[in-house]
Image (tube, rainbow, N blue to C red; front, side, top):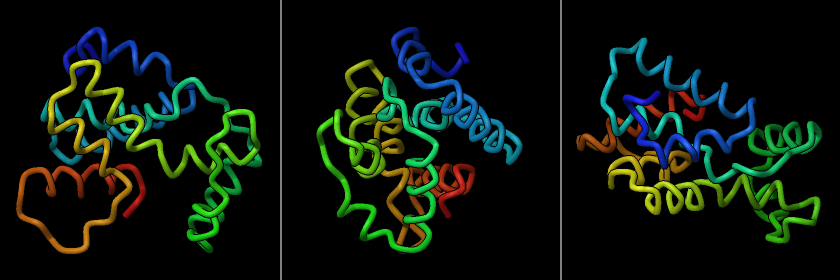
Length: 147
C-alpha cells in the first residue's frame, strides 16, 4: 500500500476497522483486476470509507443501512442524527462519510483527484461523462458495489 498511500494517508487507512480495511482492499483488488493502477484511483479505493474511521457500527445498524439503501433510501437519510452517542449516528455516517473522508484525505495531503473521488463515491453518475474523473468514479463505484 505504500506505493499508493503516503505515511499520513496510510495512518488514515490504519484507523479504519478491520472489516472496512478488508473491504477497501477488495475494492483495490477489483480495480487492479480490471487493469487500473493509477495512484490517485488506488488511494481513493483504499480511503473511500475513511469518513467512518474510529466508529463502531453494530451488526443491526449495518443490516438496517443495507436494507434501507435497497428499499427506502429517503428514510435512511431522514433517520440520520449527528450526535455520535445516539443510535441514529450510524445513518448520519452513512450519509456524511464521503464528505468527512474527503476532508480528512485533503487535510492529510491526498491529491485533488483522490479527494474528489472519495467525496463523490456514493453520488450516482447521471450521464456518461467522458472525463478521467468520471471514468475513475464509475470504476470505483462498480468495484465498491454501488452501481
